[in-house]
Image (tube, rainbow over all chains, first blue to last red; front, side, top):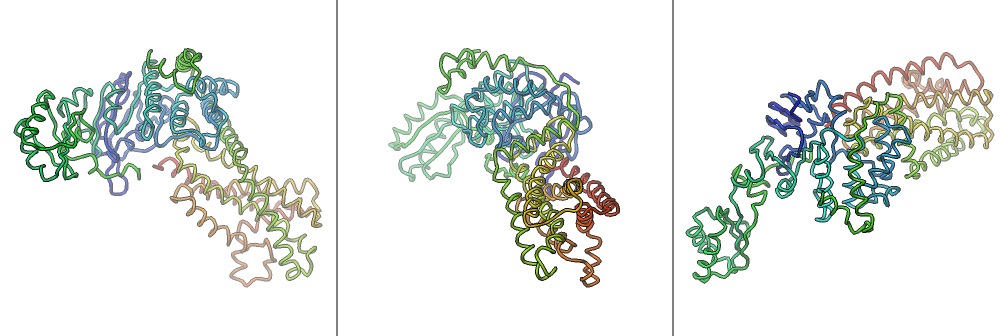
Length: 322
Length: 288
């Protein structure tokens, strides 16, 4: 089945007593971008580490580009590359030295490695920082050099583990543009993210992962359809009005209204955003004063709530230990 | 490719070059040449080059290899000289080859904590994901360390010569002695790479290193004649590999036949690599 980029059956990895990956089955085709969406500790990073041959599965099988990740590890390493929280570059070296180092490890001669390094630094807008130590780079530059280091020799499959976590919006857009350019040039990309909008913007298909299992799979529109079209957030001026507001909203919207930790806040998932205006009118008629009233895209929490019945925070944070 | 063009419009890039940046990205991504995979020697030397680049960027790491040998040589020679040998000059002739060994062995312990730091920063995960001979990252690191050991040995010998030490073995004897110390340090360092992969913090690695190095260097024949020792301690000193190394180094530098001690030392080297090399690689392969 070499037409699949990634194929796993019942993949399991346990650290001490924690089950990080609990029987994951995947069949991801070549080409385009696939997203792994899930909270911290869901098992995304552990899964990617197994696929990239850095961690051995305890049981189950995984084939990457048609090769077994345990038996054919070196063949897999020849074809894939990874970037992320782990697999970073050497902070003590300059950007140019890091790229030359990797080029030479792949077998380029000194001169050819230097040429490739220059080419990538130019393409990633890092020419001015080429002779600066990477530890002096900004967050966005750092992420760009990490990605450049993974494509010194263009891989057939690129793993990007949370490539934009901690970046400001502008740097995030830059990284997104680079990723899109790579996909359009033919590299298959597997991206992990905690952000629904990132998966939404970039990925053709998304696997939602929670507590070491794939709990949903599909395009972003398919996933959002399961959650409803909009997330309604309401804060009343006076917390004492909340039960009444909740009752009014429930009557008009006909969906479950959830109390938030904030004693003045309520939220609900709305299938038809059009009905929300009537809810606003009804609240005004009941003379309930509002501090905030907003309708937005469902958040990752809401997708999770809809898919799992619990919020993303309630998953443990074993990923860090992994 | 409009998003790509937008990328090119970043504020830190002159507008005139926006088009060329997008073009540069396209050509960088179009380069799909796959070089021939390099052999183990080539990748090990490349990692050795990385170690030299790190010395260039962080020259502070040369502080310990220059200051320690000077401090040890002066301290031990003048502290013990009168008491042990009756004169500083006489003692120097006995102790300098030992100090040469001690200076290098003391700095091998940085190997472990440096490796642990690299692993914690995620650098080794990238190396482990490359299609290369697995031990080359570690072998290369140890080759780079040989440069630091050579500096330490050079400083000790130069200071010894200035204080009046005279090697009867001449230049060839001294070179053989230093070469043997480098071989031993390389072999011995696999112990530290193993601990770096078993223990969780650079501090813990350092602590264990001290625990191992202190008895190995002090309970040896570096400072004293073992014949003065109680039986139980002498028994340890006589099997201690550091004692064999020191005797071989003394023989080389003193212009005597070193072949007996040389073979025992080389056997120890082979044994250390044969045991801790594979143990290190098993941990390296399964780490994480």
